Structures are given as structure tokens and as C-alpha cells.
Amino acid sequence: MSLLLAKADSGFTPPSAADFEFQPIFGNSIYFTKPVFMVFLSVIVISVFFITSARKAAILPSRMQFAGESVYGFVRKTIGEEVIGPEFMRFMPFLFSIFTFVLVNNLFGIFPLLQFPTMSRIGFPISITICTYLVYHFVSVKHKGLLSYLKEICFMPGIPKPVYLILTPVEIATYFITRPLTLAMRLFANMFAGHLLLLIFTLGGEYLLHSGLIFKFMSLFSFGFAIGLTFFEFGIQCLQAYIFTLLSALYIAGALADEH
Image (tube, rainbow, N blue to C red; front, side, top):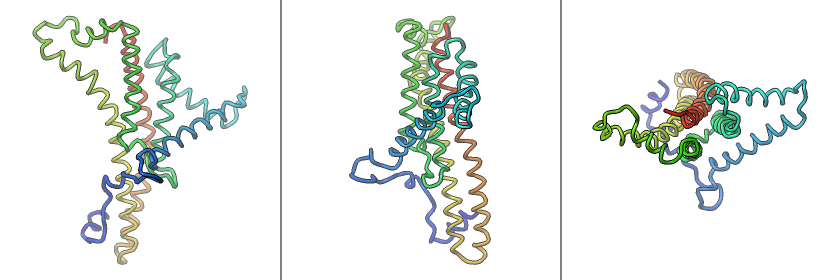
């Protein structure tokens, strides 16, 4: 409602995709923008947190050690062990890295001062999706052999030969285009949409606050929605990190299976 009222007054410019574009902090290179530095910051935060939590490991864990072990145990049991099975341990460093990296960069969206989810820039979800699919195809080729793997994709057993004319292109597109595209787009779209909604209600509330008396009262509802959406967005950010890692584990499990 606040957005509609604000739009009625030509003084308010609603948030758009332009708010996700950042000028370089220094120089003219796209590698010196805020999202890039946030990615490096996330690596530092993750490294410092887990090094600190594991530095003085004890039988009776400290709060920091307990927090670190809880995150690792969650990924290990609910994703690695249950999805991949007996061979899960050799993939744990990869899955754990993906989960923590995506999670921290998502949570930046509600973190004071930063307040921008890095994964709302499509390049970052695409980058980690490429890593997932390099691992997936490497495991498939190593486990089954290149020719057997390609044959399995192109010519599923038990299918009438004329059907291959339609099925083979669909399967090739699924394995090499559709799956990686949807994996990246799911993460990107959720982070983009969530951040845009927060911008709408926050900036809309701020605009109404500086308007007439009635609008000042209505700004309370806009700010209330923004606060509620912040908690909702926190859940979505955690969920998307889990889903991305879970799907990565499912693809790896499929690569290890004799038939999929």
C-alpha cells in the first residue's frame, strides 16, 4: 500500500534493478565493486570463524567450538551422509565450503552496514554452479568412463530407438544446460526478489515518514512490513543455502550411482 501511495506522488522513485548495480569503489574495474569485496569478506569471516572455533578444540566444547561443530555436523549428517551415502566424506570439504559460502553471502543482505546479498548478482551463483558441475561431471566420468557416461545420457536403456530422436536432445540439454541454469537462477532469483522487497518497504516507509501526517502514520505499517520481511528473508537465505548444497549433493550422488 505504501508503494502505491508513494507512486501516486511523483516525488518517490521506487527501487529497481538499478539499485543492484554498483560503481567501482576505486578505479574503473568491475572487480573493485562492493559485491566483489563482500565475497572476499565472506571468505575472511568464514575462515576466521572456523579457525577460531577449532583452534582450542576440547572434549567439553566452548560456545565457539560448539557453533562450528554444529554447522559442520548439520552439513555432514543431513546432506552428505544421508544423500551421498558411504562415499560422502571425500565430498564433505566441497559441500561444507559451498554451504557456508552461500549462507554467509546471503546473510549479508540483512547484516547492518552491508545490507546486500551477494548472491543477488547473477555472476556469483553462476560461478559456484560451474564449480558444482565440474565436480559432478568429473565424478561421473571417473566413476563410469567418458564413453559410458555420454552413452548413458544420450541413450537411456529400455527406450524404443525412434524415441531417441526426441529424448536424446532433451537429455543433453537437461544435463548440460537446464540443470545448471535452474540451480543458479533459483538462488539468484530468491536473493534478488527478497532484497528488492526489503528496499521497497524500507524506502517507501522512509518517504512516507517525511510526508503528511496521515502518511507518517502509514509509514509505521511499511516499516513493520520491512521488519517482518527481514525475519522472513533470514529464513529464505538459510533455506536457499541448504537447497543449493542439497541439490549439489544429489547431483554427486547421481554421478556415483550405476544408473540415473
